[in-house]
Length: 183
Image (cartoon, rainbow, N blue to C red; front, side):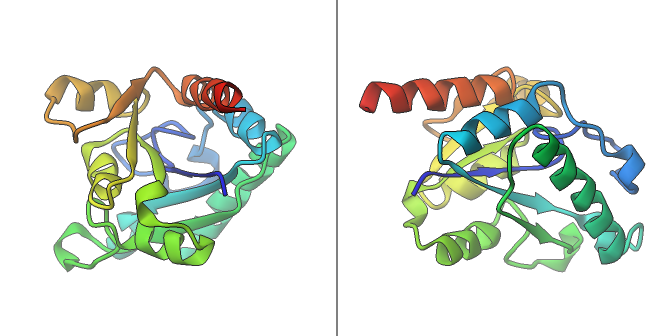
């Protein structure tokens, strides 16, 4: 199975320091929807793993988050792609849960659901905590420079074997080219 795990904010859509609190605030990063579509057409399963502490902070409800994700699903579908599932952590950082990245709880759940070995996971993120979550499972961390990614790269101390690309479109081009070399 070809499975790609994506962080949401800063990878698929523009990030906001004030959180994405309404469907109207959700705006796709240029090229991200086409990248998801190209991977989907090539047989990849796309899953989102996202920290959504705005729920735990009382800023949004799960119903609002579902409306935001419905907009994301429609936008991806309109581009010819598909996101299989969205996994999210609703907790605040101080809750000490196992599902908030950089802890790998969400990724363990995805591995179980999709029947893959955690070490075969590939995750694209724009923050160190995204990369640390997949690195904890010996999976492949990929950093994009969109969202907080450029600052994350500049800060350094990334997990070993982290690959870095300008955006999700560049990640898709790399994965599809690598797949073509194997075939």
